[in-house]
Length: 296
Image (tube, rainbow, N blue to C red; front, top):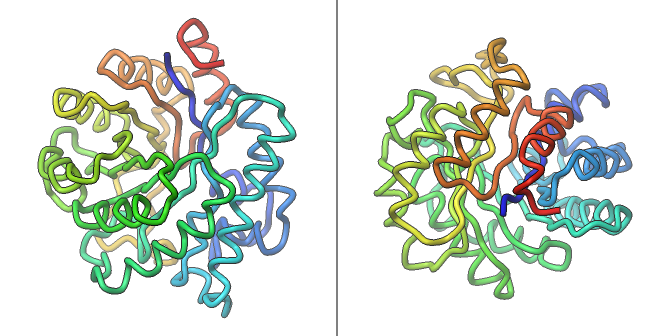
């Protein structure tokens, strides 16, 4: 059976809330318009998603500190978890909630991954804040083997035996490994001792994810999958608030996204969805295309 995930939160919230494209980014909705978060979760559920991710990608101290809210990161993380749970409860459908454990500095920047002694306490606090609201934890957009290990080990230690999945982000050039340059085999070996519950690739080109799935599948009998983006190749020196833009691919139509997603299933993916730039209509099309195989 195939589990359909949701799509991107940040871009969709940006389209609905002025100012959500800078500063606090997706966390701005938690501060100013939490009802929009519930609304978007519900749209993805109605589109066929049976696994949704909490809107907590930006509820880390480094981002909240832009508005002097760093000390409240646990409160906003818990709020993101509760809103996702609210949307599931209102739907009446068998939807799981994944608690997002994101990079603590910048996405796509292995050179900015913080030292272990700094990140472990923050990940531990994030896990504890999400724990009452989620069914599993998702360490997502991990750009190095160590970053994934730090997040996943705290999720295992503090997560009350709830499942933990790691999702690595890849270079857009197929077959070139993580954004750190490390291989899939190296990344997997780093977390192997943790006995994780699934392995994925996210926030990268679908073509790169599909090649990586063929490498990952022989390494594990746990569920694997991907949730890819519609972003162009991330340029060197990228930061979320910087002047270097990543842009959106114009060739990745909904139809092509579905075609590549079906190829991912053929490569072994049993969990599949979308990330940046993939919206509810894309997830609806994916769900419709996989209707005979998906978890309902």
